Length: 502
Image (cartoon, rainbow, N blue to C red; front, top):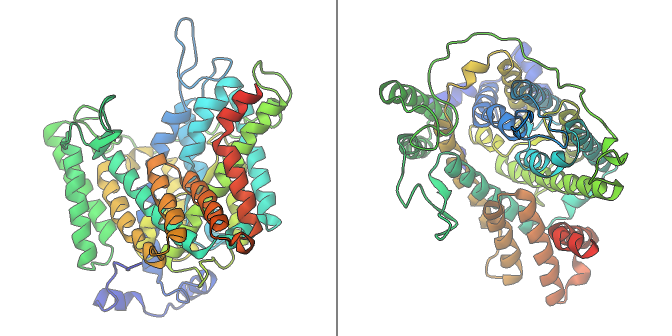
């Protein structure tokens, strides 16, 4: 990627001074100088990553938290018994697990890939799994999913699959993640919205027009951060977030936009916090029933259904994380000539722990967050950035009002800029060869269009294998690609298969 930091600027020269004293030990442990980074860049990258991810502490409680059913009130996000997870408790454990896993991954794996509750799996839990059993039993399945992922990581299976992926597909995965994260920013800021029932599936704002003042500020933020990157201003993305947050606070003070779909902020209202320090409620930690889903205690869930749920969780976790690490590693320039990450086995094993810890704490499975690319764009190359991000997440448990000052519209522009930077990976794909172009293209477009990294990888693998057979090169295709393609076919067709079996 093109580093937005100007290597010839005085600021960059100051950053590159050889660390001394205690900083020298930090430098050696994290290999900061070895990877061409500095302590300042790592800290700045970790800070930017936190602000790009902080929304999860607000969003995760909305997705899996709710109110219990009482009387005629059906409640929200309830399980089979009408019970719901308390949103305040979900907020606390979301920040706790994100902080712990970001720290652990940074210290052990030494990559700048921060962790938080995965959006795909938490939605799967809330919509599909929990309504058929109890919330503790649903979280038990997440723990089992994590244990399987850890075993696959320790035994080298995940590493083998990672290394078997052709370089062209790895480049396509990185570019697809760029498109995906850009769509996340555009959608979160309201620049791209759902179309009307009889119109296009997506559209610009409302009826082709930017509909709200916050969305207009988002557009200004994209241009501002674009200018800062072009001018190679050190810390350009962080500076852009700070500037747009200040502008948002001023605009909110004068216009009183509040929050909501009709003219308001997408999530956080940018006002100075009134509250101070609060003690987090961690009551959900340990509230898990590991084998409850397999006992037959729930009317519509048997061993087979529970296994199908675990299979879905494992496949989603396995390839979401692998794809994200592939994209982030390539973007950070940490991969070798074949697109492989050195030490990926240890990293993949630690990543699996995120599902175990997330399920045990009832925050849902935690995994590598694609928004880590924003910190990488600021120069982060080592696990020190993760230490900064993780520490801030832990602090967020006590200072909840403070991180809510930054609105989504001030952070989302950074995701769009990073998406543009990551799209540069397409240069490694020879689009003149259609047998390479089609799988790469399908991988790239399926990620944003289906809002899933794993789906993009699955489509890419299946089309790669089919075209390899068509050109008579099926013997040269790695056996693991065949296996994974077959698993994805089962995964994608699980609905019709279940209908036929039933």
